[in-house]
Length: 257
Ligand code: NAD
Image (tube, rainbow, N blue to C red; front, top):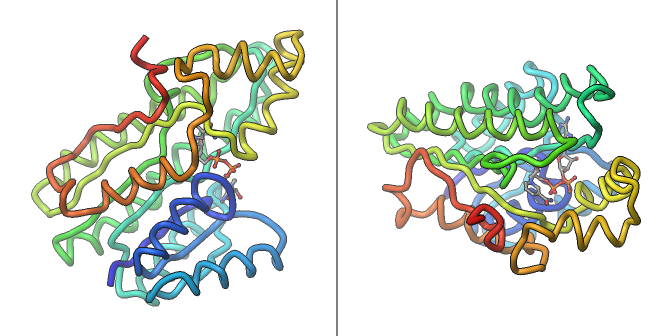
C-alpha cells in the first residue's frame, strides 16, 4: 500500500489530490490550516473512502522543523513516503514597489522552500525502497508571468528548477520528480485574489474574472480541481515511470500563446 503526503490539502487542489489518493486505496497524510473540527471532518471523510488510513499533520510550511516532523510522521505511521505532493501555496497581488517584504519572504518559504525541505527529508526513504514520486503543484506562472505577482511567479519558476534538478539526481533510483502547471482553478486561493486584483487594476471583480484571469485561458473556463488530481494520480502510476524532470500543463491552452 502506497504512502502519500500532500501538503496544503485542507482546501482546493490539495484536498482534491488527497481525496483521489485516498479513494485509490493509499495511506495519506493531509496537512494545512483550518478550523480543527472542519479538518477532522475532512480527515474522517477521506479515511472512509478507501482501504488506507488518513492522518492529519499540522506542519506550517514556513517552519523547517515542523516540515521534517510531517515527513517523519508519515515514515513512522506508513513505513515511508512513496508519493510526495508539494501543493501548499499562497498568493499576494501587489505592484513591486509596494510589495510587502514579509509577504515576499512568506511566499518564497511556502511556495518554494517548503518543497526543498519535504523533498530533502523524503528522498532517502524513497531511495531505500527504490521507488518514489515527487509531484510539485507549480502553475502556469512557473512558465510565464503576470504583473503584480512577483513573489508567486518567482517561487513558481523556482519550483520548476528544483523539479528538474532533483529529477536528475534521483533518476537511477526509480524516483521521478515532476510538476503540474495549472491555469486558473476556481479555489479559495483564486477567489481571495479577485478583490485585490480589482483594486490593483482599478476594475470590477467581474472584469477580473473575464478580462484578467480567463483572458489568457483560451477555453474561457476555469480548470476543475479533479482535473489536476487526475494528473497527480497518473504521474504517480507506473505508466508514468519515464516521465521525469518535466511538467504537465492543465491550463486550457494559456501557455500555448
Ligand atoms: P487553497 O487556498 O484552496 O489551498 C491552499 C492550501 O495550502 C490550504 O490547505 C491551506 O491551508 C494550505 N496552506 C497555506 N499556507 C500554509 C502553510 N504555511 N502551511 C501549511 N499549509 C498551508 O489554494 P489552491 O488554489 O488549492 O492552491 C494549491 C496550490 O495550487 C498552490 O501551490 C497554488 O499556487 C497552486 N495553483 C493554484 C491555481 C489556482 O488557480 N487555484 C493555479 C495554479 C497553481
